[in-house]
Image: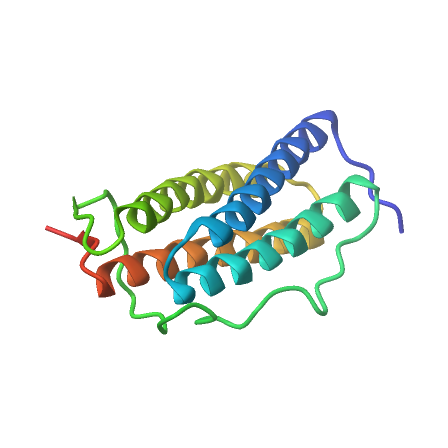
Length: 162
């Protein structure tokens, strides 16, 4: 069954497509720039997940029902398992160790916060239930990326919530 997207849905999905493309570019570039091998791996993993997100968005924009089967990683794919901590602001950011790695992490954490919020709006505007579910799944992974970055930063003294 082909999806019939409204003009507003198509516009929101085009925005999300653009966000995913930027995330892929940033994570790929930052994986090369990072000095810590663990951070390089984290960014590379997230770049691959962002590519999956882009593939799903492109599938929806092409009028196809999203295939949820092989998409996504299990929670906790980052350096540490989920511990239920959220970072509402940047807290006290310290450049412990590599200042460049801390700056890369800070940029990606801010990016993930923005992208996750944009998905929230898109989810509420979708009329098709399977599209809503697919976007909700992507948003959850974006939040997991943010949590993984936060935990990496906190474990290295780069981010101390006050």
